[in-house]
Image 1: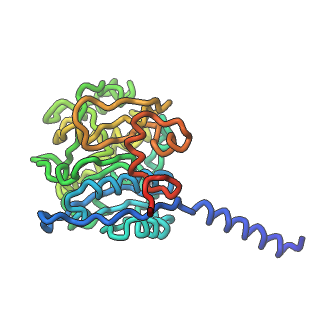
Image 2: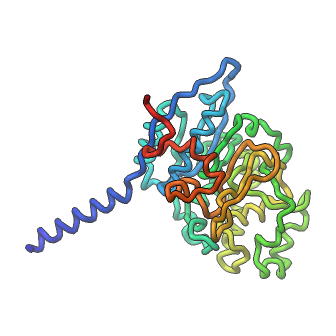
Image 3: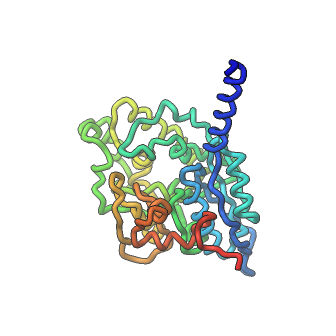
Length: 331
């Protein structure tokens, strides 16, 4: 084969590979949800990450939010993504949710490239997991409050109830779990060195675990107290000393634990994806439910596709708009 033809063949193969790799799953168009008569002009801002791996979960999450909202047209979504996929993702969101009010914000992964250390699960090490650290840089200054949701949540209540919680003097509100053994989230090296462990010494309340997949954030206070810089500092310390094992969660505990506005547990029924190693099935926590969260290794769309779902994965399935699913029919 002539050299020029050989190079052309290789180039075409590479282009086909790239196009295939960037091809996103296709979704059915969601119904239009409109505001009720009691709605005013108050806007709710919600931030979520968007990537190819978790896109199916993100789409289901958005669908659940607007379906259960009294004022869905008042909800503005801020999707954090990388520049590489932004055109494809914009097209996917627009065709799936033609009436959705949303913005795409490009996260520069170079910001964390040298700050990420390996964790117990590879998925936790993806740069986009750290985009929430940079919310104040990504969102416009006009956004004073935002709800951050992970891509594996389903909301089964009106999100305005979460939006309207009083943060009082706190930067952040989230459901806390004070029965969890807080020491497990950090290595023995952390607890044996007072320079690290003293971080929790003068907090207003007992430091407790909270899950960062559901957070209500006062962006004005975040900027005023330079929270991004504080989170980055702990990421740099981790890179050097290895003081925790769980990706982007521990820096938030180090900055906020003991200084969080407690939110009702109903807003984060987390852990439905099982543990971070085996992803075993789990039950709901006792009490009412406003949000289901498949945190952990097991994701409902993967288990459903493999015909090995957990019992609670059936609660996720009705929100799945994946085109090969059976939720929505044109009949």
